[in-house]
Length: 164
Image 1: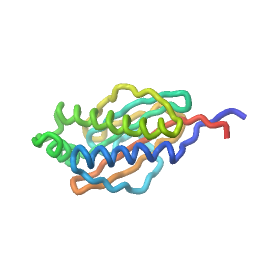
Image 2 (image 1 turned 30 degrees about the horizontal axis):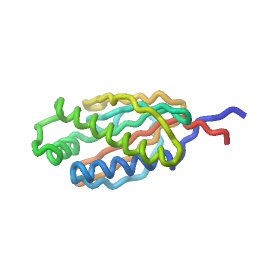
Image 3 (image 1 turned 180 degrees about the vertical axis):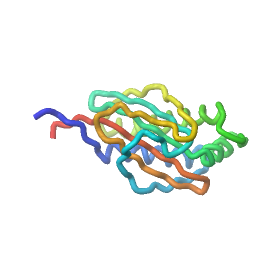
């Protein structure tokens, strides 16, 4: 029987944990995870997204972290002490750095569990109703997060090969 792509919770949770840790540590922002769902379209749920590809022997896929503008501006203010009036290059750079930190944190956790992968450089997309295209055969899982300053979303799309 041929190996088929599957989504494993033990692969997804490190990304959620890492996002919550990064924002709490770097921006004193506490996120509350919501109910995951399968994403049926390519439209982002927020205003600015960091998208990063990953590939390794057991998996290939991508992760995106999307923030509503209000939350992204709040994080910027808490991290750097200044709040821009709107999304600008500094905010998009910050989202790229957060995406890198989240993926790096998850990579460390997953490495302890035997998963190894390389990370690409994050791409940043912003604007109302921007789209995110994950290049995987498997489903895209979207997990919403709420905070006092707006919403964030993680999208995870991975093909994890299993012989089960």
